[in-house]
Image 1: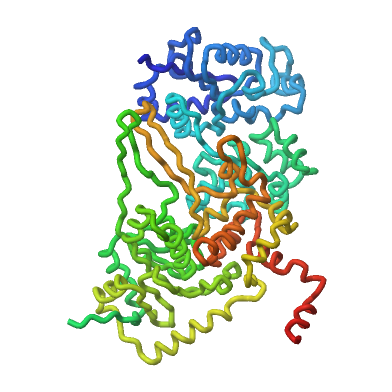
Image 2: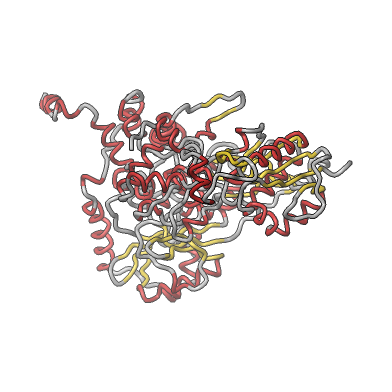
Length: 256
Length: 362
């Protein structure tokens, strides 16, 4: 039987997810044993999208017309397309300013709106192409990437239930950062990361997006009790939820 | 030789270190240790690290009997050969409070009752020695309501009660007796004074709870059933994050998810179980897209139902031991005691005791 073919593509992003994959050497070698990596510009110099891929992993948000072209081409080549990382899943940190007109952002950053190609808002992949599975996280969790690959290459739908970060935080017996008075988004954020931030003494920054039933109303109340208000509150909550925070807050009936 | 099981002994506090060292010959030693402001049960190498001056650990000791993440078996899908990888380890868990001993007794009832006891739980349990220690409650403890303030039954082996300069040791099993005998030189016979002190400190425990901190749970099973549609569930659930902290820190919760995880090349598949929570939406999702608990309120209510209605039907006792972990760790500050009080006292405001006066005087 021919080896399955996989690809790892990146759009507008920091390449952190790909580094996470490259750093996970032991698993990467195992992956190379059983699959052929046909497209991985950051890890290989021979890349092609002209053959059919069994799975294509895509990092980054769709923020330019080049991104759009790339991901559409990737979609055509791939049987399965998996969004890896928060940018590909929800837009990422660059979606923070999606409510500001792009021209204004360009003017502020580059002093001109004259660009060699068209710049758009930072969009998650699913706004442009059909996405079969999402693995959020900033960066994607290496272990979860390998497990997802194992599921997908064996023809099984990956199973990562969307529990709160509190699950992994409590299982590692970390003192509750919310009860300590810190700003922690763990109670509304999807687990799977192993709660590394809370175990190091920080509050969860919410990089993995929502779990199955996030209670925004209570989160806002809890953060407000901890003296995080108005604009600061929004800025904290939207760091990784930029693209959809306002809508979610509105749905939850939160008035700010 | 005539063999007689003893019921109690005395150990001076200065002998505790040596006793703990001696326990290691019965298996790995597990005991509470302090990490910053919190305590947790941990495998002990250096017995001086053991800290018995604690109120509650973050996770209950069940993690050493019923691991939170466990591999059930592995198999090769091609040959369909199954390989069990579980091997129980001899262990002594020292320093459990009465509530946690009851917690394990409840898990025993769930896992071992009936004709088909869980073989792996049984194996782990057989290899585990449980040694309890007395404690003083804080504002989140309510074991006096749930009837779990003192150890009873046969789930434990030894129980230490602090009587000042010594521990009064109750012997609860043949294994406990064996341990005491093997370390005989560390123990003393009970004096009259010891017995008086023991009776005094145990009798005094009930005065250490404040009325406001403990719920009335008389007939609570029926109260909860009859208040099924109460608005109190909506009010309380509104603040819930569905984060599962309450169940994950509960000494009696045992629900888990089972999933087959293939290796990359698909040659080996592991059946993995992990502890989960009824508070997570996915947990009540079944094939066909049906949700047993459709919303937050139903999931929230389910926990109370299981603890105070379900368990009594199943094992004839509550599934709650009053350890207070759920309310102590809840990031939203939801207090099980307050919810129970509200349910128990719903409607009380209007009548303010009058009806009961009439009933009792009639």
